[in-house]
Image (cartoon, rainbow, N blue to C red; front, side, top):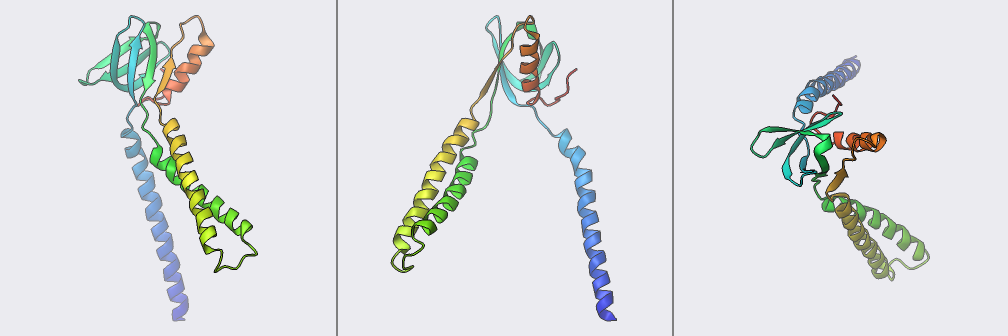
Length: 182
């Protein structure tokens, strides 16, 4: 009888814990959304001036950028040449994933190459293949991560090329604090 009560209490505890996690996740979601920041950008106008700041929103015919002094600056899209979106390098993440993939490849290759060998005699070559796979993966992943973190330049076409302009604005909206068109 006591075993049934303990099992019932354990099930209630798991259900209560799950309910608590779901409630905290549900409550935290709006708070996290409010904290979203726009990307750091450099807006280059057709007149040649450059203004750096945070991309707030992208509308059909304008951009809103908060400059480094905290003032909002609106730009008519007809006067904007390009927007450079600063992205953080992903060398570490790419290197880590590459090393893990290389480690797996090295393990698979070493077991395939040395499957009939005496384990005591093949430990050195097996280790060398695994380490080589890890190093190659690390370097490849770091290079890929570096390329993925390069700044992105988005050219703003003139208003005569509507599809190209709409595409550029859609790409730019992904980096704005407020992403919906207005």
